[in-house]
Amino acid sequence: MIRFDIISAIPELLKSPFSHSIMQRAIQKGLLQVEVHDLRKYGEGHYKQIDDYQYGGGAGMVLTPGPLDKVISLLKDQRKYDEIIYVTPDGDRYNQSLANRLSLHKNIMIICGHYKGIDQRIRDLHITKEISVGDYVLSGGELPAALLVDSIGRLIPGVLNNESSALFDSHQDGLLAPPIYTRPSEFKGIKVPEVLLSGNDKLIEEWRTNHSKISDK
Image (cartoon, rainbow, N blue to C red):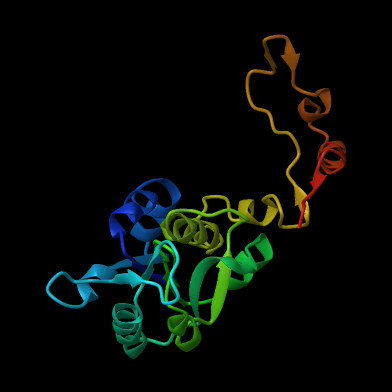
């Protein structure tokens, strides 16, 4: 089992991704545990403040270090984390190889940035790995956090009905999956390639290999 602790300023955004389909079944089976922690509960002052203006000026608010340090320290006192991840545009580019490595861990914490990001001192004090899910900017780290949990969680043995299916996903062998077809064998005048209907496993495997694309890494 892998446990994910996710710290978020807007935890409501993370309810749906883990309440349906494969991730929901993995949680129900006890193969995956996802705990979402509301950063606002650790806010400071009467208004539970968690953000402030950045020193030096500039647009955008920054998540202050105090509330983040409180919840991170509390969680670290409860268990040892294999990785404490901050999802950020300037982190290492996420890929299948990294997902495979992270799937071998037991406890992972994910920090969701918001507004302009988080105070650098939290990154210096607590973060062990910084990950980018692509060269673009999102409103917060909740969607990337859900992406990490899904891509890692599906690699846990027993999560997928077909144990081998995750091993043959796109990117696992440096290739993108070939075209796939299902019934009917002809749709709007377009037929399924004859080789896929032949029952010849060797020819089918050769066809799939020839029609796979090299992934862009």
